[in-house]
Image 1 (cartoon, rainbow over the protein chains, first blue to last red):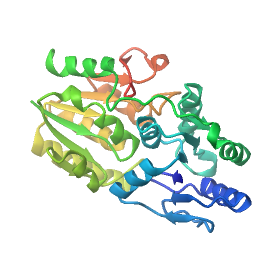
Image 2 (image 1 turned 90 degrees about the vertical axis):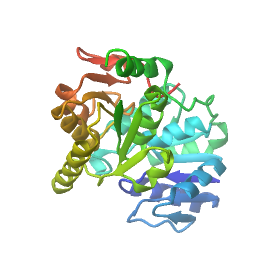
Image 3 (image 1 turned 120 degrees about the vertical axis):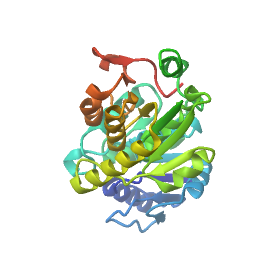
Length: 160
Length: 147
């Protein structure tokens, strides 16, 4: 199952519409999407505006592939649960976000090998068609790096 | 010791939770924008504030006011936040009432520190980025939420 995630803050019609088109053209329908009040409603697969946290987590764990905006919450969860993930960054020019920081996030995390990034519909289709070649990265731990934790701990408990 | 730990929903919140072990046995009070998050940490006190960003000034003012009330009531020794706007408000009011303050800019901000992070910098005791190339003066790189 492919789980499509766009976060809770605002819709991402461009992504949802492209996936719907891909689903129609390939006949692949094992898709569930969380669309956050999108104007465009998919016709080829099941969708929900928002999904309660527990069910969301279940779907996330069940999914073979995550396709999402380049939001940190989704990316970190995918790393933690070793899910292959394709991200399409939201762009300010389409009013999909306040700025283009998702573009830089997608770039940097793709370079680190953590995500597969797609910047256009063509790249998204390409990534979806080759989805079995996206390998999940080794899992990350449940917590921040020791360096960050000890820096905060030192600040809180030794100089406070 | 009391820590007020603040983050808006989504990635900011997930990053905040990854810092929890650094809080040791301190009393931690969490604040976020999503009511359901109270169940993430059922052994901690939790407040929710309304979700606001700079595109909606009225909501921003309401959220800042909610945060002022929380700070006044809880009187935390430390305020720590991974963003975004609610963290800015919490650190501002915290600093005004004598808390020490820590800002950890989201790992999503690769090219520059977030707008909230830049605005709140003068009110922070510790101002961290998660990208080495963004460390600059007071803004330090001390590791990331991913390991």
